[in-house]
Length: 172
Image 1: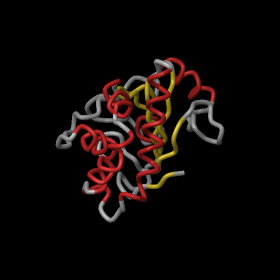
Image 2: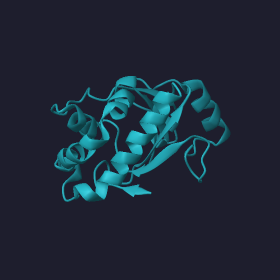
Image 3: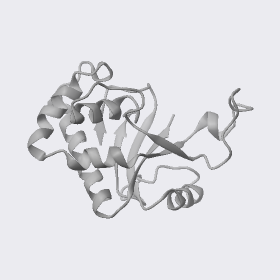
């Protein structure tokens, strides 16, 4: 299990690959929204990554690999869980609403998968060193997060080979 220091406190994240959103929803309905990665072996091939927020922290890795500054839209994602309609602009109607309590699952854009897939192995250490410099990972050594980056890269490569998508499961 990989651990990071970035991302919202108390939010757990797991990354996994699946053929499509419908298969993800079907599994989550069966497991009441539980992580499709745990317990090991999980339903889907994945990586347990504590507090690795897809937009901020994973986004910083994507930016580091691409050699560009981070931006809020660097990781595109589409929510696939909860399967109920999203709340309006005022937010969830009550504290028990699954949109308030989670878990949440997002499908990441194929450009995220393809960026992770395409990084040459020889360039991973430099990309991880740049990633370790981001504010969300302050105090983290590149050597400590390199195994996580390598796991995510390998997951993306397996997803690409199988023509699958990457997903992020998040829970408070």
